[in-house]
Amino acid sequence: MCGIVGLHLREPSLEPRLGELLTAMLGQVVERGPDSAGVAVYGDPRLSPPGRAVVSLLGVTPEEVSTALPGAGVVAADATTVVNAELPVDELLATIATALPYATVIGSGEGFAVLKGTGNPVQLAESFGLAGVTGYQGVGHTRMATESAVTPEGAHPFSVGPGQCLVHNGSFANHATIRRELRAQGVRFDSENDSEVGARFIAHHLDRGADLEKALRLLCERFDGFYTLLVSTTDSFAVVRDAIACKPALVAETDAWVAMASEYRALDVLPGIEHARIFEPEPEEVYVWRR
Image (tube, rainbow, N blue to C red; front, side):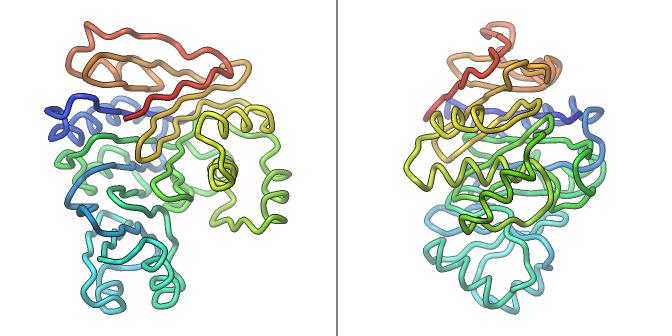
């Protein structure tokens, strides 16, 4: 059992409140995942300054980053260190791989940052400074580990492509087989988490030209198990459930925002919820909202 929350803002006047609202939503699903937590945030100028490449790292301290990458911007957020620089994203990733080969990349892109840690999700949100974050889209997850160890690397979101993010409630029964298939095609993995296999599968197909809706339809065809997924990119926000749809999910939509959560109480904190269209996503139906 894990908790998922996500918020896609349509109304720009709400962007200063993104972190406040996401923090409130995350606090309502703590019991679903007390082991660890993480968030992905789109559009916050402190975490991801405009016009600069951004890479989120685990396994390295801010001091090590500052020493290895003079001139780079560095933001510390619990176990995560977020680095930004006036470089293309691929060039910043290559520089980090050379200067800090022991660091684990947990997110990269422009206008996008991923923060992860272990422990109580409410305390993690505070250590991330999440309530002060601004932006147009955010995704959060609270984890109860079942498939792999409780580590920051095993926490969600999983972000393995530029600006891409996946959070998952459930388990993939055939993840080991698909991991082997992807490794045979040159795909590298950072953890033994089954959810990372889903993220790598989606990124692999996006890289080969599929759009997000097609990539998620392919996932439904190939993966066995029980799952609810929330997947985001810099311009998209998508939800899909398995054929049985036994893992809870609710979507609420207004003219000002679209939100998804594992439980209604996480939606009830949002402004205008009393006017929202609220529905339960249908099995294997891919829902996509775009900026």
